[in-house]
Amino acid sequence: MAKDISPACKQCRREGLKLYLKGERCLTDRCAIDRRSYAPGEHGRRRTKQTEYLTQLREKQKARRYYGLLEKQFRGYYEAANRQSGITGENLLRMLETRLDNVVYRLGFAVSRRQARQLVMHGHFMVNGKRVDIPSYRVRPDDVVSVAPNSSARDTISEATELTASVSPWLQADHDNLTGKILRYPEREEIDAPVAEQLIVELYSK
Image (cartoon, rainbow, N blue to C red):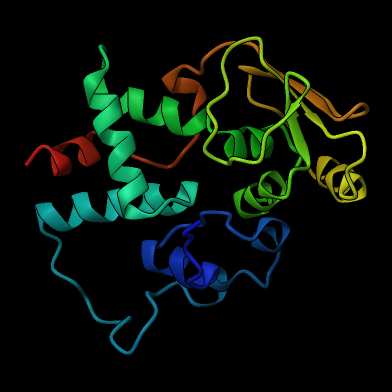
């Protein structure tokens, strides 16, 4: 399975925004974007001409990196969202939010989406009592996500829940029993992704 192995901190610096790709480290003074807020690379401190295309491209790259997807995967989500009725941008974010790896992160069972993706791929989570090891698996309302009974990562997952301040309102989490339930699909105002989805739609519509 293809994945992005580029340094997480450089991705945040490139977008000029904390994407919280390293979990707890992003909240400390070791965060790279706090120490070097300019873009990485030899020309990182140079001023760049902000064109309409560049603004749209940066927004797409930000969203793609925020959810940990490659370009082909992200484009596939956009095309699926565009085929649905309703607002394409909101459909896109809703589809990304209901990926299993993102739900595991939103429930507080992992400190970052990268960790959530790894935990899912290693078979540490179940959906409705069945083991699922596909990070892109899309959950639905009333689905129950739980940690596998024989999971060797229970301690790691429990530690992650201790760092969780709150859970998204469209989810219900039981951190004592390490289970969570999808109450409904999220509304746009409940998705705190730092993304202007309309710019992504404009980019792909060209």
